[in-house]
Length: 209
Image (cartoon, helix red, strand yellow):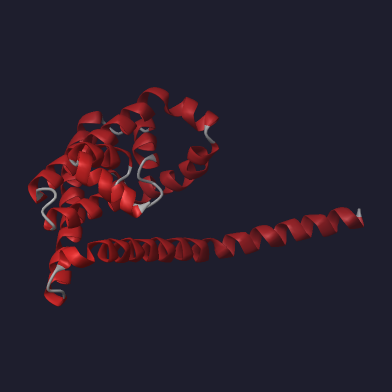
């Protein structure tokens, strides 16, 4: 799978990167940054392509929420489940949510849709999205590029170990995701325990009745 993504990036480069960043994109962007270090792509081209893809992606999701948001909430339970969580984030952090949405794993697509449902002005979202997309594209592009530079400090020929380094890079990202999921699971643990107690109470009460 990883090698397949790598070959797609080498063969079709910026088009694959554009589509990947339009949809979600951290993994493919970091890989593109590493391949830029290896000389398959240009780091400037990677940053610009990622910026355009991520910016247009969030603009699309925002206007999707503005035009079809209510219908999507009724049709897709996954979006509806995250709707309340997203609203709490919006109430707590305000327009800052629009800036950090693409950095929030699991909410990258949902948050712009929900922001489109709210009264947030399109011009405000446009400006926030512009700066957020630029920062995001630079950070994750350079993450992959600097990973390659770091490897070069320890290896005489990075190209010789290229596939191993890509697997290591993906392993590090998967570890970060697993830590995120474990943390989110732990955060929800008290709520699950309360729900279990409520169910047990209702079951006991019904049995006695």
